[in-house]
Image 1 (spheres, rainbow, N blue to C red):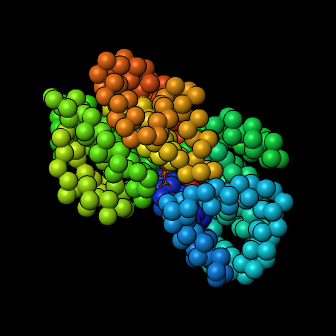
Image 2 (spheres, rainbow, N blue to C red):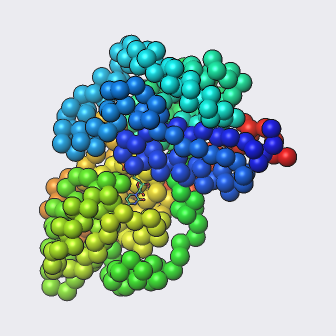
Image 3 (tube, rainbow, N blue to C red):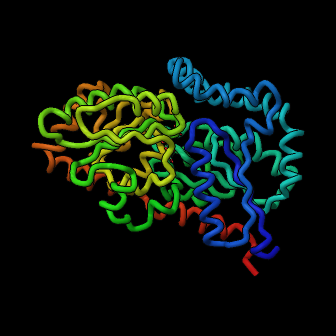
Length: 383
Ligand code: UDP
C-alpha cells in the first residue's frame, strides 16, 4: 500500500478533554510526517458500544465534578484485575459485532488507542478481523497509570516515563515493545515561543506584571472561581504585584460569572483557548488541577505548577510526579494559593525561577514527533 493511501484509525473517548487532544495531536503529526495519510479519530465508547454502556462516558464529567468519591471508588474497582477482566469480558462479548463492523468499515493499516478502556475491547477483535494490522497504545496518563492501559496485545506501547515503562513490564508487556517518550501534545508546544509582549497583548493581558494562569482542564472544573477571587484580592493590595489570567475552557457559566466581576488586580477572563502554548509562554506560574495534558504542556513551557486539586484516582499520581521533582507544589486552599503566589512573585522570586527550571526538565517537547515517527515505521513504506 502506498504512503498516500495508508489509513490510521485513532481510538479514543470523550472522558475529559485530554484523550481527544492527544488524538488530534497525533493526527496533525501524521499529516506533517506522512502527508496524505488518512487519519480517522473515533470515539469507541460513545459511538460503538451497546446501550446503556455507551452512555457511561457522558457521566464522567458529572461524576468527577459532583461525586468525586464515587468516581474514585469506580477507578479503584477497575484497578482490580479480576473484576476488570470479568466486566470487560461481558462488555467485549456484547459489543463485539459493532466493533467488528467499525474495523471492517475503516479497514485501517494501523490502529492506535489513546484510551485505557479501548484496548481490551478492540485488540482481540482486530486480531480476529485483521491479524496483520498493528495495534499500538499511547498512554495519556502521567503518574497514575490505570492497569487497563496495559490490556490487549499491542505491537507498540508508548508510555510517558521510565517508571511507567517498568510498570508495563511488571504487567507483562514485553520490554522491546515499550517506548518511554512523554505524552503526545500539540506541535505548537515544541516551537520557539512567539514574542511575549505581543502574545500578552493578543490575549488582552497587562504587559509588565508577572502573570498567574489559572485552569481547570478542558471543562474548567474545580474551584477555579474561588481561586481567581483569592488571587485577585491578594495581588491587588496596594500597587498590583501581579495579574491573573483564567481559562474557563468549555465552562461558559464560569466565564460569564467571572467576566461580570470587577477586580482589585488585573484579571483576564478567557473561554476555550486554542493557543494554549502562546498563553503558557506568556505566563509565569500555573495554578491547575492535575490533568496530564495540562502538566505535559506546562512542563514543556517551563511553567512552575501549583496544584489546587486532582480528580481522585487517575490524577493523584500526577501531583507527585511534578512535586517530587521540584517543578511545583500542592496547595489546595485558595487563600494559601494566593499567599504562595504573592510570595513567589515577590520575595521568593529566585525560588520561582528554580521551580521553572525543574518543571522544564520534566518536559518532552519531541514526544509527539517520536511517537508518530515510530508509528510510521509500523506502516508500509511511502511510495
Ligand atoms: N485546553 C485547551 N483550551 C482550553 C482549556 C484546555 O486547549 O481552553 C486543553 C489543555 O491545553 C489540555 C487539555 O485541554 O491539552 C486538558 O487536558 P487535561 O489532561 O489537563 O485535563 P482534562 O480536561 O482531560 O481533565
